[in-house]
Length: 185
Image 1 (cartoon, rainbow, N blue to C red):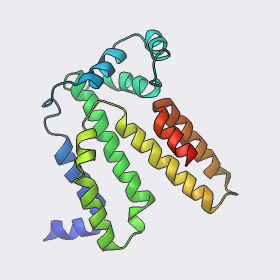
Image 2: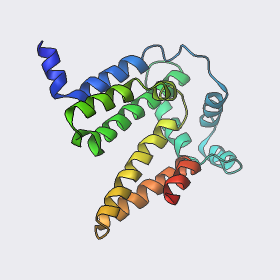
Image 3: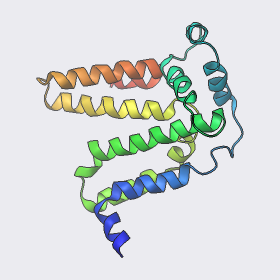
Image 4: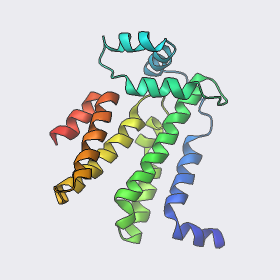
């Protein structure tokens, strides 16, 4: 009864716990697929070669530099497990941002429905466990959208311009398509 009362007062914590339970177990279960292998192969290179190789393809370097830095941390598991863990943690950050920016202001019933659908989303469950830049793109997109909507509401605030510009620039260094989509929108 006490746990239910606490969950009712703190639905975000319940959602984060549910997501962690869905995403964290057995990060080694699925085989490494082609794009994940590309990530592993790319981050194994020396930084100068990594940047040189990426300059000849369509992937910006930010995610690969982050993944490379993350993978040198003394964490348990092999490389693919550590990279998938990074994706899970970024998805938990995205959940927190969605809550803080938009969901916390909704009516209680709507908040619960949103969090239930968000936590159980097959899309987020699948892509939140992949060693790719998807969850980092989501985090940066949420920040950019937050600042853009605040900017439209109050264009005189310089920090909204700065926040929107910095988050969009960071997103361009992670992946061009979502950055272009948000910029055009």
